[in-house]
Amino acid sequence: MFCRNCGKDFAEAEGVCPACGMPAGDGQHHCPRCGNITEEHSAFCTNCGAPLAGPEPAPAAASTDNSGSGMPPPPPTYTPPYGNAGYQAQQNNYRNVPPYPPKSKLAAVLLAIFLGGFGIHNFYLGYNDKGLWQLILGILCCGTISWVWAFVEAIMILCNSITTDAYGVPLGN
Image 1 (cartoon, rainbow, N blue to C red):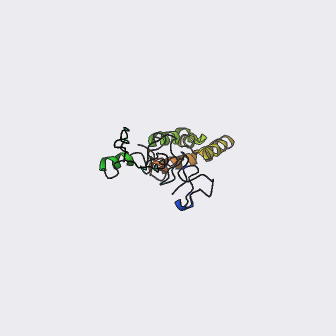
Image 2: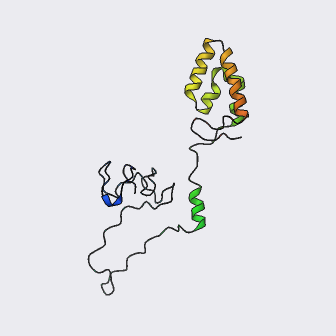
């Protein structure tokens, strides 16, 4: 079980998270099944599909038979259809969605060829530190070393040696 407050793994028998002291089941920031960060009022975890409803209220000590008491029966509880193949396919669509659209491979190559001496292609791909060093090197050495560096990186992108941006999102076509 994972703590709903801090996301640390702990045994449910402990009753209280040893990392943050929150009682088991309390909190709204992490999935109790996989520990993934969740939206505060989500019904299900987008990583594993676990229901994120709060802890169930304790059952009443009195009899639950309301016949003759004039009270309506309690509403049925909703159980998510985990065995339903359509539901599983829907959940799998949310697992590997990048936080933004992929960067264009063609744009990265063209930037490397035409503006690569200033590291613009590295800034485009999110490699800001490498782009900054390439910019400084391009200014100090009149671009000779950094243009060769950029040309080699353009070839590496074309040959699929560089396939992702700085955040691990694959380059698009």
